Length: 75
Image (cartoon, rainbow, N blue to C red; front, top):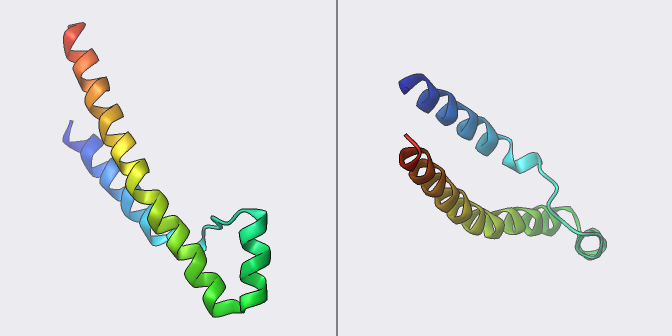
């Protein structure tokens, strides 16, 4: 069980380290960002990823709790 926790932690760290390379812009935001220049475009991309992280983490937490609760009920 401890091994799964370490694997999950390593995967999470690797995902966070690569977050700067993700492209999170839609086509309209990409066009707007390209007109602003490289610096503001990177900042806009980082802001989009940052704002998307909170709801995804919340949904992941709720899903994990639901999965553990269902797993315990069917034992």
